[in-house]
Image (cartoon, rainbow, N blue to C red; front, top):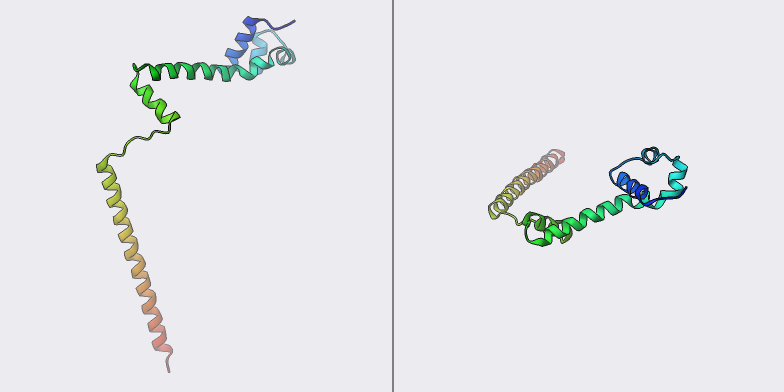
Length: 128
């Protein structure tokens, strides 16, 4: 027994779609050992081949000019593009951050004043 092209393609497609090696062996009427002996390369590269074919199609669509959403998706994923920040949202985020910072500083100052007052009160009572 030796591999044939039809079974090689079936093994690759089934592995790319998530089938187990056991399922592929049963589908091809092979033992798991024979499947691994004759079709190991096809099992190993089935998923990679499928991913490359999909990536090739995605690239073709993204660069065609007919699918601007795919072009933008490609640039986000492959070129690291980020969406522009809405100026109003950025201002709101800044004002929220400033408000939080001001509240935190007020609490810290209040805590420092209380600690200083406690020190002075302890110092006044411990003096003879």
